[in-house]
Image (cartoon, rainbow, N blue to C red; front, top):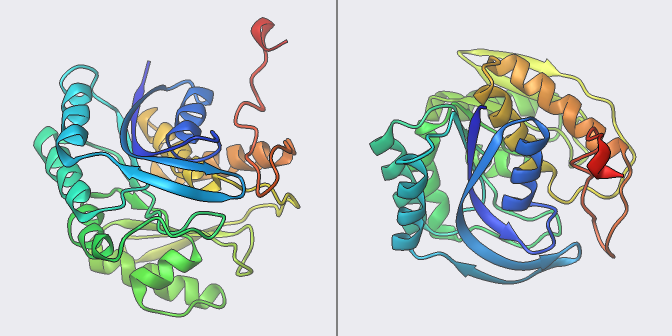
Length: 265
């Protein structure tokens, strides 16, 4: 069985973060592990509190995983401080981690800020150069590139800039009223569009976490990056199309929409 590690924050409502990653990896038939960077008190309406892991405790979690069940892929999500980012980067280098997917989580679906200002610089300096692929949404791509993105041409310019600056592939995700269901993968000087079907579902809590962990799951199983992105987009479309409706705000998706069996009845 292939394995994957999520390094991210805990979402008490279960729709995003570590919980979304574990569900997504499990749905892909991959054994999921976690290193928790922060505990969040949040639900579909917003984030009310955040408690960061200490650098020492995050380091201990990563040692525990890498020295026993080595992950075939790593997904990195919410990391709110520069100290924690430094610990992650050091451990990934120490253990020779592979197939690293970085979702530069800066703002929650609800609009809550999840990344401190000092952490943005550390993320760019220490983590992005280690990534196989980076998965920013439009606001995150604007921050990382320093550009304003209003159309497909802007997505291409930003993705090219980020990819060349940090030496990694970049999947610039549509949405935010720019190419709603179309994503752009830029790597090695070339861009490839992945066209998706727009699904009219207001419940999008955890979509970024889910897409990045689906990509990591597919990389762990041996698919190349293009195939991993294609399969991940198909998966998230299915999870959205299941039209789960929970909570009073932007609710979660049904990560287990394809799960069938005696124990689901």
